[in-house]
Each structure stands twice: as C-alpha cells, then as structure tokens.
Image (cartoon, rainbow, N blue to C red):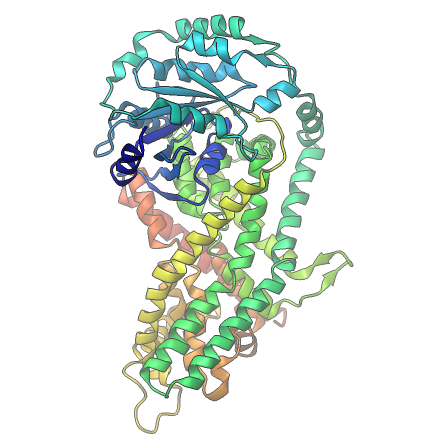
Length: 629
C-alpha cells in the first residue's frame, strides 16, 4: 500500500476488525495488547451488554478499529451474549454493519472446543484470520500443532500469538499489513450457520485435529495439583474465606497513605481558593460546594482501586471459576444455580453489570431471583460511605496482634450483604416455586500468572469510570445540592446556620420525621436524597452539608472528625446497617425494568430493600442505645 493510500485510509473509514473467540481464549488480552488505553467501553444499542471498541496503527502505518466481541462457544446462540456476537458478525445489528475482517482467537491447548466456532464463522464467507493463541502454554504441555497444515485445512491465514507477552501480537500485525485494503463487508444470512449439522461440524473438527495436532490430550499437571488443594471440599472454602478476609484488610491498610495525600491536597486546594477569593456566592460554590463535595468522594479512589486490583488478579489467574464451583453447593441450598455466582460477583463492582450478567441464566425463575438479589452484594459505591463512617467511629487498632479492627468491620459488612442475599433468595425460592437445581457446568481455565499490562489497563478503566462519574454526575449533583443548601439564605437575626433555612434544610427536616426513629439527623436525610442517583454521592453531600453548617475555620476541616463529634455511635452503626440494604440507585432500577420487562419488579426491588434497610437500621440503632452506644 502506498503512502497516499495509507493517509486516505487513516483519514477516512478505518477497517473494523472483530475479535471473536470462546471465553478464556485470551481474546481480551489480545485486544488490550493491540489497543492499550486507546479503547472505549459502552453498551450495545438497546441492550445492556458491554461493547468494547478500540483502535491501533500497524507497523506499516495502517489504521484499524477493533471490536472485542462477547465470548461465545457457537453462533447458534443460546444466551443474549452469543446473540450479540452472532448478529455483529453477520452484520445484522442496525447501524453497525458486518465487520470487514474477523480474527478468530483460539486457545491452542483446547482446539477441540474452539474450532467449532471457527468453522461456523467460515460458513458466513467473511475475510478471516485465525489466531492460534497460548502457543507457549501448549508447547510446555507437549502439544504440537502444525500452523501451516492448519492454514491449509482451513483455507485461511493462521498466525501464532502469545497475547500476555510483550510483542506477542506481532505476527497478527504482520498478517494484517499483508492483507492490503479491505473492502467493506455486507450482511451475511444466518442460514449458512446451520447449513451443516453440529455432528458433522464436530466430525470435521476431529478430522482436522488428526492432521495438524499431536498430544492434544496432554493435561496441565500443575493446574491439577493446585486444584487438588483449592477445590478440596474442606480446604477450598477455607482458602476462599481467608482470601476474602485478607482483601478487606488490605483495602484499609494499603489505602491509608494515598488517602491521606489526596485529603491533604484537596484541603490545601480549598484553602488556597478561599484565601485568594473574596467572600461571596462564587467562593461558597467552589469551596463548600464543589471542593468539599467532590473531594469528599475522590478521597476514596485508592480503596476502590485496591479492591478491584484483587478482583482482577483473581480473575486473570483463573481462580474465579473455582470460587464459583466451591460456592455452588451453598447457593443450591437457597435455590440458586451455581451460574448465579458470576452475576453476583459482578455486583461487587456495580449492581448494573450483575443484573446484566444474569442474562446467561436460562431458567427464568433463577434469573429473576438473581436479578432481585444482585443489589444486596456490596457494590463499590457503598465503599466510600463505609470507609467514612468506619474511619470516624471505629478505632484504627490491631485485634489479636494480627488484624486491623476497621478491616474486620468492613469484612463483616460485606458478608452481611451476602448472607442477606442468600436469605432473600431462600424466601423467593419458596414464594416463586421451582425447586429443581440446575447442575453447574463451567470451563476451568489453566492457572497462570496475572499479566501486569492487563491489570494496569483494567485498573485504569476503573479509575477512568470513577473519575468520569466524579467529574460529571457527582459534580452536577454537588452543584445542585449546594444551590439547594445555600438559598434562600438565613433571615435577619437567625440563630441557626444558613443551611437550616435553605431548601435543602427544609427537605432534611421534613424527612427527619420519617428517619428519626432510626437515629438519622436532618443532615443525613439531606444526603440520602442525591444518594438515590449514586450511592457514593452521599459522602460528597455530607461534605457539602457539614461545610455549609460550620463557620469560620471549621469549614476546611475533614468530614470524619465532624461527624465523629456530632453523631452518636448508635447513629453511625444505624447508617452502616442502612447501607447494607440501601434502596437501589435510579440507574440500577431502570436496568432491572429493562431486563425483566416489567416496572413492577423494579418497584418490588426498591420496596423490599427500603423495608429491609429501615428494619435493620431501627433494630441496630435501638439495640446499640440499649448497650450504651
């Protein structure tokens, strides 16, 4: 391709490459290797399934767009994820068109399972490249695959890649440059997929393997030895419990220093702004509204990243499917399939992807129950609230010389959400009927060391999502809350802080009548309202409310000491209990409505969670008072 053609391609429409493959084949690792941080994550139009798109430039200067499709075992779709993959590949998604090139990524250690999808895509007649990934692992196991013979049998380009290693994608880049210009692809009829029966497809897979591969049945003895311990019926659950416990200890212990740095920087910035601006509405907006509110949420970024670091490590090394296997019996006891584990685990990040992931559950009752209990998993938006209250009221000291007391409390709160979810599932099992338990079938990938590049990209994506929320939704809510908290202002001879007479103060005092029995004051009531949009906003809202409720130098003081001096221990414990069951944010309720197809399930979720939250807070508050808190 000449220089003029390359420039025209870069300026015009870059070809779209679709990365396609089975789950756990290294497809996303290859996507990260190609695109680095040049990627964007959204949802497919009309459905809540993640769409990850990026771009890259090849060594020859050609520009490409690349789409990481949801993992699929077949184009004869059985789940919504597979339906999306099938429709994108066939060019049936409205406004998207077919990809210009399909790169099928296969696991070299598991070709027997992976090649069925390759043969199905081949029938659509799209330009294709086969990526024989994980060839390094295959060679260590003694598996021999002749890539040239495989290319002859499949009549397509075959390249070897090691997506987790630097430079492991170079053979794919060379193959892309050798293709030359790609003509825009047209939609393909789905009838071609089913033109050959599954039995004939599997027979063709076996024939190809007999020609191109040797020792395909070699097993990963290292993974088998680890599994003999990790999946032990007694030792396995104990290891899982210890891992979870250590993660929550680290969330507090490791995050202390960076949190102090962020808090100090926010305080210093607020002080500088206050010092160099004249007293007035604009200074109040910047210092008490934006800096106090947004800074109060931003300080918890280290804890969120530490939590996600551990989740990404466990996912990347292959442990999470084992955890699902270990918990299958426990979940079956409350009427859930082990398939519910992955959606519930996703809910620890956010209830929205957890509700979305329930689409993979075929049984309608199991799917509905999983959706209804997913928000009881402690999402990352609760973490800032937990961290604030725990830091203010729970001493930072060692227990038995080994454990951090604050980490123990956080661990307890997370498991309170899990146990309550199991209780609700048990109740729904008996209410909705259907006691038959579906067996859990999961592919257990081989263990391997987490890839640092993938970890870094995953953490960067999480930080970007959090900072985007801070800079958009949370910032907007803080400005609105500041306006409600600042106007109409205090009258002449006022005896209370100005916020008492504001619109927010009126709302807070009105709600206080409802929440006083569980120990909430009017300041907490104000913070609950914007918390309906996003739970972590409650921390920023408290920062704004208490900043405006103080005077003089107290405005710049940290939020934790403020609430420690104005709340009782019973109120603090009541608020923690509230957030274990806190009614869902509006975004989650809207997704529940979309996924279930009925508004009544969203209303039912909001109603039962409010009831649980109020009851738990009422009991906690009054028991704590009886015990002298």
